[in-house]
Length: 234
Image (cartoon, rainbow, N blue to C red; front, side, top):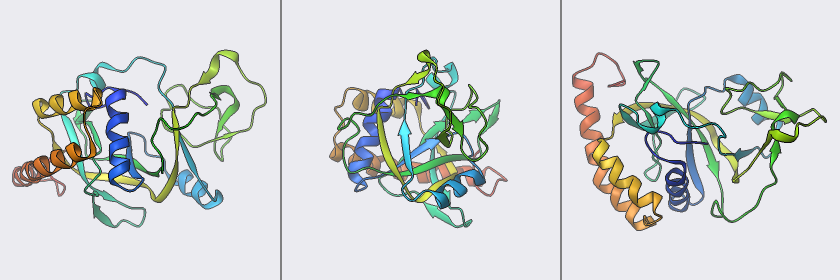
């Protein structure tokens, strides 16, 4: 985990914990990496799949700290190709461009956790002892989200990663996000100040969603008019 879409990690965690409360334990965690068929093999083989969340050791990229554009994703496609609106309590954001091009999709893990993110303690994980699930290959330094298993008894002392919290991976497990809308920077900065200072309650979050959702729809509708893309602005 790290800074994303102009929001620091502390603010992201505070926001997601609030979404978890509003969603009766369910929250969507956005990721930029397509996980492919290996994820579904993992889901089929593991009775109770778990997601572990670890802060990145590397400094965040400037494009994540100060992105040119910030997108919120309004819909998702499940593994069967069926389109759904995002749940009312969930807000997944990302930077609006990658590699100089406007993003057309993003991804999310669907998680469940009964208790707050700060309610438990996990042991650290030694990166050198992990292998990519199914293939057995070593993890790459650029892998941010991956499916892993422990297969190597040899560990490197400096390779420990702190685990801040864990959650269950639940239906629909992993989705492709579509239909982005742009969040005005001034609005996002004001919201970040509340989350970062832990002054945003569940009721504040509900009010923010009620105020912002109409503008999301308005932006998306305008984007459709001005774009040949079937999913609006990319």
